Amino acid sequence: MNTLNCTQSITPYERDVFAWANEQAAFIRAGRFELLDLENIAEEILDVGKSEQNELANRMAILLMHLIKWEFQPHFRGNSWATTIRNQRKAILKRLKNTPSLKPKIYDAEWMEEVWDDAMEKASGETGIGVDKFPEVCPWDMNDVLQEGWLP
Image (cartoon, rainbow, N blue to C red; front, side, top):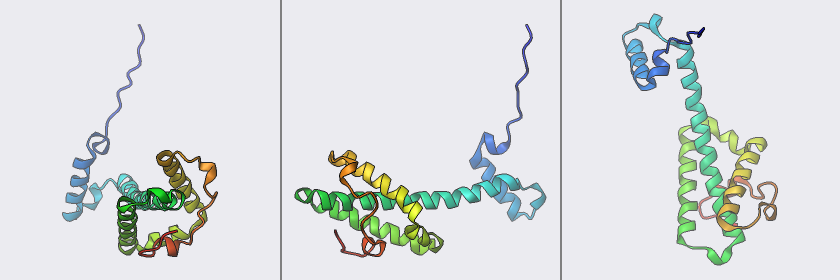
C-alpha cells in the first residue's frame, strides 16, 4: 500500500497563538527583531482593526434594531429597550472616541447598508415583522441616531 506522508511542520503561531504572542512581545522587548514573525504579526495587527470595526458594526446593528422596534412596536416600548438604546449609544460613542479612525464608517453608505441589513434581520427575528415592512435603507441621520435621548 502506497501512502503519502502528509505531515507538515506546525508553526508556533498555529500551535498556540497566545504563547506565540508572548514570545513575539519578549523578542521585541529584548530588541531581538531578527526573530520576529513579521508576516503573522502584520496579520494580527490587521485583525485588531477588523475586530474594532466588527465591534462597532455589531453595536450599531443592535442600536438600530432597537430603534426599529421602538418605531414599529410602540405598544411594547419599555425601560429595557430604552436602556439598551442608551447603553449601545454610549458604547458606540466611547469606541469612536477611543478609535477616531472608525468614525467615517458610520457615514459610509456601503458599510451602513450591511449594518442596516443586519439590524433589520435582528428586528424581524425579535418582532415577527417581515423585513419587507422596514425601510430598505436606514431612514435616520446618524447624528440623530447617536444623539442622547433621540428616538424615532
